[in-house]
Image (cartoon, rainbow, N blue to C red; front, side, top):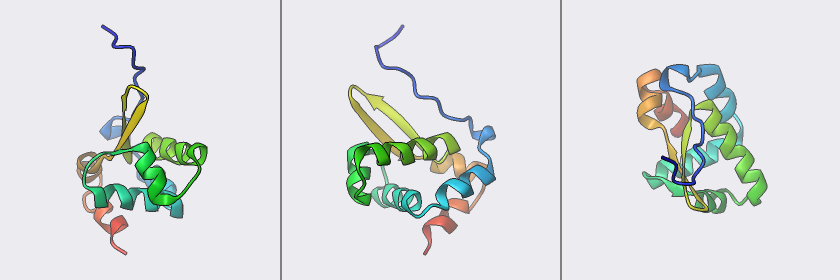
Length: 105
């Protein structure tokens, strides 16, 4: 049964690659996004992530897409909104301690 919302693809936990995560969060804007999400401690509307890093909508969407494709974040559609959260449990299961290292500093 479809609710009219298109499913957004995410890699499975065992498909998350360390090189992809590091390459993706190695960019300062994306690392800032990850830190903003971690500081919030819960999912955030994409517009709030955008406001936290001060980027235009299209640029922010591009960076959020890369974070999602690398397995760092999860995007949940709700109507016209997109809610973003860190995949902390998945990242900790796959690479214990990595997220804490990225967030320190």
